[in-house]
Structures are given as C-alpha cells and as structure tokens.
Length: 78
Image 1 (cartoon, rainbow, N blue to C red):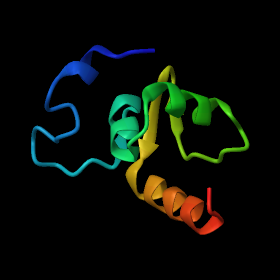
Image 2 (cartoon, rainbow, N blue to C red):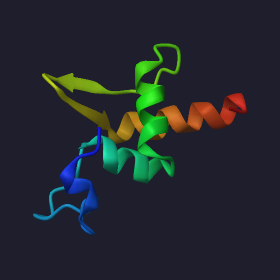
Image 3 (cartoon, rainbow, N blue to C red):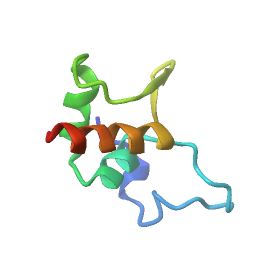
Image 4 (cartoon, rainbow, N blue to C red):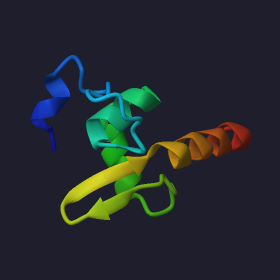
C-alpha cells in the first residue's frame, strides 16, 4: 500500500515544470489532507464517488475532478 516515492520531500511537486493532471495515491491523500488508509477506503467504497482512474495496477486521481468532488462534499455537508 505504501509507495517508496511517497517518502521523498518533493513527491508532490512536478520536477519538470509540467502541471500534474493526476496524482498518485500518496500525493492525492496529501492534497486532500487525509491519510493514505482513508483514501484507500474511499477508493474501495463504490458509494464514495471519489474520482480515480486505473491504469493496470496504477491508480491516478485526476486533479480537476478531485477539486469538484471535494466541493460537492462541502455542499452536502460531508
């Protein structure tokens, strides 16, 4: 569940200046201010609706859709 690149201090920063369209799980959890375990629970829970895309074994969380999802959670009072 833990990825090795999550421990690096620059894991959330683009290294080449290209804006990130999607975040890996450790970066998405950090961006949302939650733990990776909670993110995995939300991802596994089909009713949570947290946006993610699977590319084989890799999971990517689209930045734009995460922002919209979070705004909907606020509107619902979640």
